[in-house]
Image 1 (tube, rainbow, N blue to C red):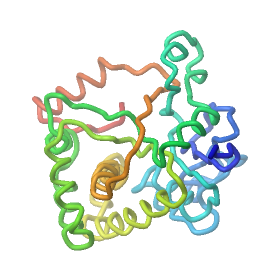
Image 2: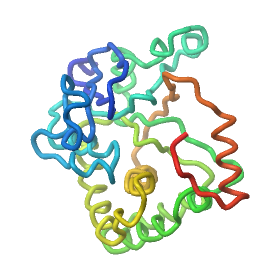
Image 3: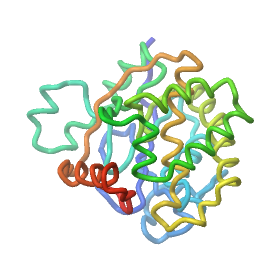
Image 4: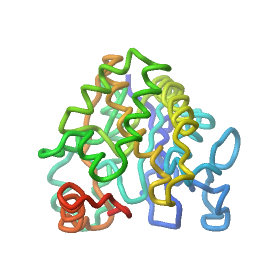
Length: 269
């Protein structure tokens, strides 16, 4: 049965004015609106209804995810980022279009994919020379993963095996990007947020600078795979496109300095 396009709502999380996809499936969403309401005054904010907008400094795009969970009534719900979108599966279109926004997947293609899949995720990010755990330990703070495992042991022990498997894997579905049926979207949020709230209680983000205080958003990216695997949910992968050129040299050098030079990340690339 074809999914009506009007029943799909994909929030585009942003903290500043930025060009947005024109497809009506996308909802530009100002995250952290409670903290800086003047920045995107003409945009839907994550500070209405049931929300955690004022915790954006710790949760990043997850304040938008929480808002979608509590306030969107769409049949299918999703989250992407202002500088990171799902791309069309049409390889020729991705290669030949000059305007990067023309590579962003549209509602018609998403609707077709959702006929056979309840969940769409970003293509797996591979680390090759690192495990998921060692990569995080080199670039951020390993204690954040360790504490998350402790929380899982107490609140959701059936997911620990999949968490441990992911920690030793050399890739993961990250970015907090997905489109799911509302039932699974709400199920995932109902499972994930209590884990993160407990992790926040045990490892106060206020001890870090502003960049590292957002660790809860980063840790959450690694909760998706254990949830998918433990529940046996199938999914389809979509490529990711950035509206801006990615400086792979800078990203690569930052990673190598973290791995071999002992320098954790101090900014986003």
